Image (cartoon, rainbow, N blue to C red; front, side):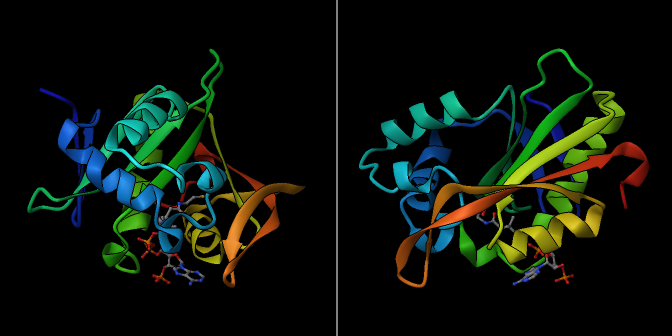
Length: 181
Ligand SMILES: CC(C)(COP(=O)(O)OP(=O)(O)OC[C@H]1O[C@@H](n2cnc3c(N)ncnc32)[C@H](O)[C@@H]1OP(=O)(O)O)[C@@H](O)C(=O)NCCC(=O)NCCS
């Protein structure tokens, strides 16, 4: 049985299933969903579920959990990666069905994953990278205790106001003692 982490709004299940990839393809190719993500320029061109699958397995790190509603609908995924034998890792979250945005699910998933990283995996620090324009994500991350550490100028291309534009990437990090549960 895959590991399951339960929240109130969603549950997380370790690994992804074949049936999850069509939604991943849909999210990857929808500029309203993927516009701020560093890999949007690449995934937006995908045509097949297989392409989305290969890309996800390659880029998404060592630990991946699918995000599911209580009715078992798959709505996205979240990862912890870049461990490199240290006591820190990188977090990412993708709610790829935007009908589920703005309901506190991102916040719940982020808290579940931070608790997992700190308490279960014994991490000391978790980092993440996001676009300087991604206010929704930055607001969410600050709410759980992430702090902005560094800005990497002109680091990614995002889709905003009907066009592609250069964006800085913000590095954020959180130590276990600063986690707002
Ligand atoms: C970014 C993402 C994870 C947010 O998830 P979500 O479920 O919509 O977020 P939540 O409903 O949990 O919102 C949590 C908090 O974020 C902040 N927030 C939400 N929308 C915001 C906005 N438009 N501006 C500023 N802050 C915002 C608020 O603090 C909010 O809490 P509140 O509503 O109680 O005040 C989700 O939109 C997503 O996966 N997008 C696609 C992929 C992506 O961009 N991933 C992030 C890559 S870094």
